[in-house]
Amino acid sequence: MNYYEFIAEIKKLCDIDLSNYKEKQMKRRIDSLIKRHGYESYDSYLRQLIKSEQHLKEFLGYITINVSEFFRNPAQWQVLEQEIIPELISKKNTLKIWSSACSTGEEPYSLAMLLDKMGLINRVNIIASDIDKEAVEQAKIGVYTSKSISNVPDEMVKTNFLKENDNYVIKDKIKKAVDFKIINLLEDSFPSNCDLILCRNVMIYFTEEAKEKLYKKFYNALSDNGIFFVGSTEQIIMPQKYGFISRKHFFYQKNN
Ligand SMILES: C[S@@+](CC[C@H](N)C(=O)[O-])C[C@H]1O[C@@H](n2cnc3c(N)ncnc32)[C@H](O)[C@@H]1O
Image (cartoon, rainbow, N blue to C red; front, top):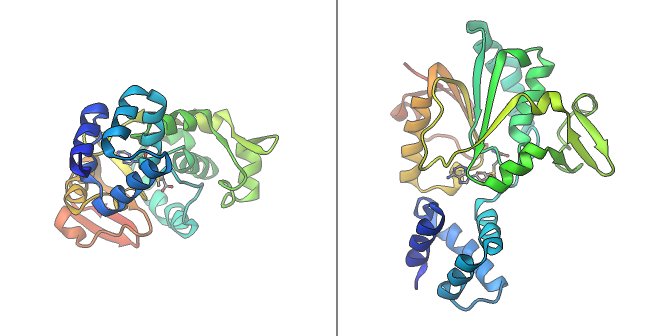
């Protein structure tokens, strides 16, 4: 069995189409995992994945790469706080915000904490989703290490977390503001009428064709003049091709 046959079997097994992910990078990751576990071929590893739910979970966790942190790239969060959110909220009573690859929750909880600080928590609906069920379960629990909160200002740590031994537990007020879901960006339908969508540090794993498809889906998921916020290595090459105007680095506006 070669790589292509292996990913076709993975699609059947768990409905994740790895042909949408950059091949070189994905193959390297899978090959190194297989080697680490001492399997000799894709066939023998696949047999193990079919047999053992535990192995399948580990495989999915590994290929989805859940690394995240609160207020990742702080300068961009400042733009969000000082320009983007004030402008959006000046035109609407309530905002619908979607963190579309939320991993273990750092990104949507950063949003909730920021909006709480701005006195707007009761005027927003935050949806957070990811393909990875385990990550979303962890997000719902909301327990973090000191490393993941290193960008959170002390004042915000005090107001939004409870310290339990070496961990930081997100408070209920913030937890309640986020509605978690499982959404596979490549297969599932998107929420509609979003005023702000975050899609950060996931597009880098996708092929050009998959990205094109997704930009169109995100455009359609936005409300008029809605904002699309991307990761720091994920600038859109020709935003106008997808109906976006570049507002600031990493922020695009739906051009109606
Ligand atoms: C590196 S994390 C990014 C987390 C967060 N957005 C940030 O910037 O810190 C990438 C996330 O994308 C998710 N992901 C990968 N493929 C996906 C897909 N097809 N649909 C939805 N989420 C996906 C992974 O499960 C992972 O949690």
